Image 1 (cartoon, helix red, strand yellow):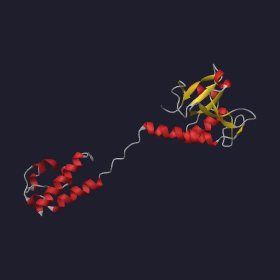
Image 2 (cartoon, helix red, strand yellow):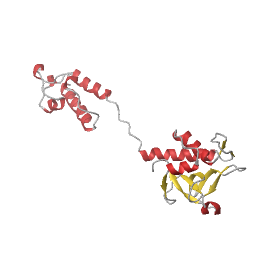
Image 3 (cartoon, rainbow, N blue to C red):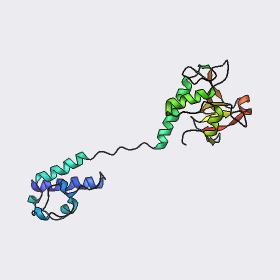
Image 4 (tube, rainbow, N blue to C red):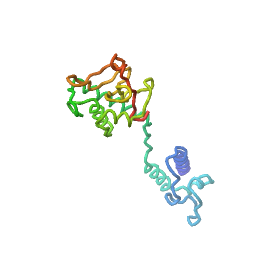
Length: 209
């Protein structure tokens, strides 16, 4: 019976060390494993490596090993940054699509009416908590410029060459959602339409790649 306990305690400790559950506990966390408690030697792993008799591993020692393992918090895998950003991009574009049909109103940034920069400002505030300036030119200046080939959903697309007096939220596949202009409603359109092709200024990125 005691030999079985010795083997089990050794296996439990070896598993803890091999799986990296944390730094090795102080020797005081466990009952001494030598006959002479006044001359207990080194860390528990060193002690267990030495020849032991059945009487040298009392039941409380194994219990404390198990208690220690139970007290070590499990490691929670961190979600990669790329995964977090991809999730934000999906939510940005989904919220942008939800505004389709809302009215255009100069100076408005939602929730039921928008101008062009008000729409992009609204979706970024709701999804990321970030306040973009309520002016397309200022959004253009703060955004990192990316090529159309490398654009991703959730990027911004700007128009009026040489400046940026109109902005939309890029949805991918050459499409954007935007507050078109006075008398028109928020809609999804191709960025390659005749007017938009002539007045294309560039793509801008607010989120990391």
